Length: 273
Image 1 (cartoon, one colour):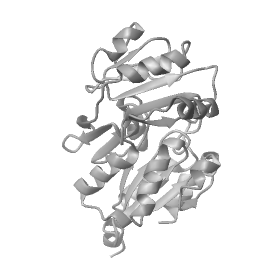
Image 2 (spheres, rainbow, N blue to C red; image 1 turned 90 degrees about the horizontal axis):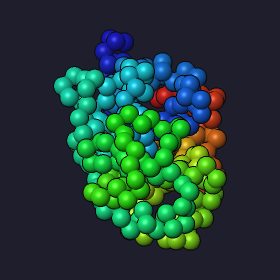
Image 3 (cartoon, rainbow, N blue to C red; image 1 turned 180 degrees about the vertical axis):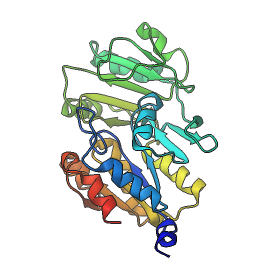
């Protein structure tokens, strides 16, 4: 009886976890207890998935380490949704957004001429102008700046070692990126997606495909790129949980907060389900 109850919870939850600053610490080590807590939540019948700003190349090994094979994975801040093939662990690109980044790239380069630029193409390949030390550059080619906008892209990434996240927030406000969606990273990078696309838009598609009630959603994150999914979850009766170390502007958008990533904030939430 106990085993049956554990396998079939009264309420199946869709649990979407950010990666950096939520599952992973800055040094790429895992938050205390998170691997076991994720396993327990999955064994209880919940759908535990990742919703990240990372590309799929930077996400797949996290799924493997967590030993989960969710039906879907949201990458590139919602511009890309991967779907599991069969019983896993293989995934295919299932839904991809794209846009013409010509004007955006020109505008950004006028204001950040020394920044490093990267675009992600709809097929998952990436093009970059200069070395980006903290980024996984598998399936990426270095090209002249002009080639970045030669074809539609799923997103644009801008990294500037001379600027802070607050500098990026100020820049976006000053130049007005009106035709795209953007997110400022927890370190000095700017992520730009098609207008109206973020983690929330992708997660709503996933929720609908899985047939999970909107009120049975839990999202956990720590960055400005998580604000959209916080607002989405809250608006539909779900739980939006901010990590304790997140900026105040992020935490006020959540319905609740948990401990920091170094203190095992995700583990505390999953243990309390």
